[in-house]
Length: 316
Image (tube, rainbow, N blue to C red; front, side, top):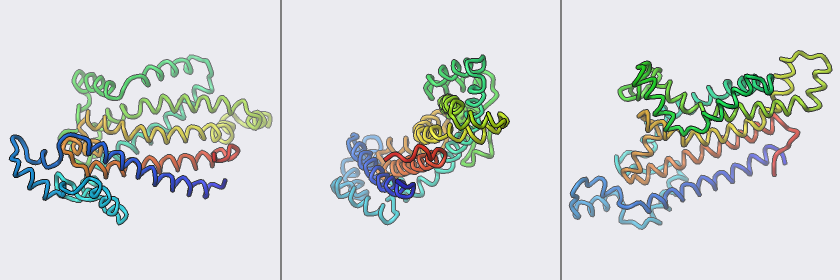
């Protein structure tokens, strides 16, 4: 199967996956007790006010009709209106997009070179001190949940040593203006992907070093550096590229946890606030964004893997 045909088939499948994810999130949100009208009515709500709010927010319409209306809006690029603020959902998401994108893409930009260098160094010294040390440290760090690691780092570097801020409170929307607030979130998000990706690069390089075309390159007298970068590493990066897509999927969940711990005003915080406010429209919009991102990243990773290792072909 050609890459173009495979990409088209995956794109159609991805659209169905996005629709399924949005439907599941909508059903789960509808199952929560209460609704946006009850939340907006506050403490000791008046039943008449709740009824008026439900009528104003369109909650008196059946859940099925609201869902089909939302799908019709999606077809025209309209994510709907927030039940909590009354603003378009697109505006609500745009407010938190920049911090989340900064954390996600910044983490990936940090993970890829560090993991490749560590994996290459470990493969070059198989069963050596560096290889064994990276294995032990990697397994230990990978086993620590993000929230636990975040709490430990805050306690040590923010509260005890005072080197870094504990949260992003007061930093404003532009986190790049105060880069110190990003250090701990980046470390928490990068630790586990670096550990797993470095081990995968190491294994891939060891397999590549034992392959015939790499042995032939060495017989031709090519330098170790050229053998690594031109012959061994491209094939070793094919499975790593697909794993990187799963890492991007994991980041979507990791960002929610990190933003909650470090009080970063991103999409993760918006999701927590929307669930608390029973703001179904915002939750659905975030589900579409997360699902579409997951589909796009996995598709790009599969195509990159095919480009890096065309001998393996594209799975059908």
